[in-house]
Amino acid sequence: MRLVLGSRNKKKLKEMVALLGDLPIEITDLTPYPDAPEVDETADTFIGNAILKATTLAPVLGTWVIGEDSGLCVPALGGAPGVYSARYAGTHGDDDANNDKLIRTLASYSGNDRAAYYVSTAALANPRGEVVARVEGRCHGLIADARRGEGGFGYDPLFFVPEHGKTFGELPPEVKAQMSHRAKALAELRPIIERELLGKA
Image (tube, rainbow, N blue to C red):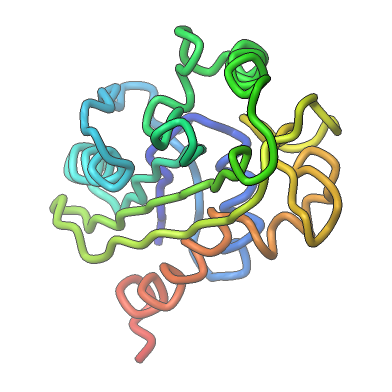
């Protein structure tokens, strides 16, 4: 039994394997599928993009697919970067540029105006491309005024978690894995995976 993360993001795959790797399922990303189509993230919501990935890829690959979309939302900025988190500064996946832009944008903000939350949405599609589950996880924090730590990816060096007094970039992966937005989403998805793929009641 194979479950495919509809992405080529090795860091997302690593987190997914850490959270679901104990299940008797082969978990991979799109690496074994070099001809898999690129899915344009044209939806204006995270769950819309997750569903696009899952429903497009599952019937082409002929296997179960998790489409996942995630990002950072700052309420004081009207929810930005939001669905544009990965390309906030213009180039997709340029974490340094995205972080720099966020630091500049929030330079005059303080206190609760620096509140932010990470959101992760995931859609599970069967090999026919039918969505059997959709979930969402959120993790709340504040945006630091400078990068702290070398861990994680995306906005992790800026995402400060008050209860730990550290950013996601500073926290050990096992601590982040217990509380992150992706961990919460996959925790919701886990019993559905067990039921649908493994036949557990």
